[in-house]
Image (cartoon, rainbow, N blue to C red; front, side, top):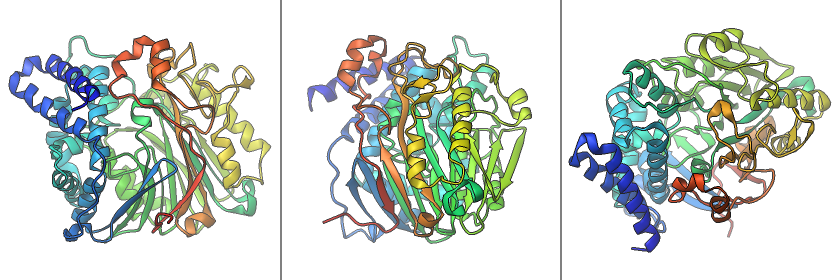
Length: 498
């Protein structure tokens, strides 16, 4: 065992035992065992055994930093392939998310496991229960001691901390509760008709997250299920939906989203967002279908502005999905942008704490910049121009180039302001971590462009960053370098270059 691995285990054991003291030694030992398994996940991937029929047809390869994974078959087989082929990455992701959640929420990992088992699991559709169990089986086949509730909690890592935990702490009057806000990052647009070159649908998105999870958000999933449509999406290890979200299906549906800033709301009787969003992409054949499926059983978790397109009809939509209020806009000639800005007055007034009148805030400045770009390039928008938009660094509040926390492509680690509305302190290591773009013609062939690392600025290196900002030293065990790669085209059934 390396010195680095020993240090990781020692630190996480302190975290585990510190947060688990009230639950006794049994809980602490369980969490420590999972931490050991996560650290072990950093070993190189072993090739899949051809003797196991559940792996038939599946494969993985790497291209410009992305890990491309092809999965096919029954839900059980897709899950097993996912868990087996991405076992090292899943263990590493669990290790990172467990540490971050413990730090940010003041709850142990066992808190999220329990919520996953007792609240989320009973309402997950049977198809995805089978897939999640398959992931657990695939991990165990690789020797990882990660169980089903770890897998489910990892799938809910975007909705449990910032939505459920806030609701839970308030309901239970938790002493010394952490100050939590729902995530509020990403920059996206969709356009069609008179606004695009050739009138086709163009859609693009860049993902903003903290760099702990961001540098791990590098999977391209090509999923060929036995029911529903084929899916091509980017994603996170161990998670059955895209989660940032960007994806297309073989019936021509194109989707992305950005989260609604400062959203408040949770329904413990609802269906997990990770299950609803996966089901919508897999089965939707129209904009109306997608909206119906994503909103069925809405639990308020990971509340988003969904941008949806249908290459067959040229229709596009923005669906703002609060918990109590929702609103749908559609057009066949126009655009919708998304920058964590709540557009529906009811959602904004009754379900958020967002101030639309502060021009210095990141969502307001990026909302303004999107309007400027759409007006300037009306009739010219295509996928290459979308790539340019997603790397845009202009700060529309101070009217100068960034990148900073207010540009469409954001870098917060250099900002002395941070992003107050998301509880990102000054110089927080977060911002744009990757981007994607596609259009109707590419979607017809099940392909899109993807850029790993922020398409604006520079590489991120941990050592000099932590030397300059020791307040973030708690991240050291799980914070990694994040490098820039070129825009790369991916398509379904893609094979590695020889």
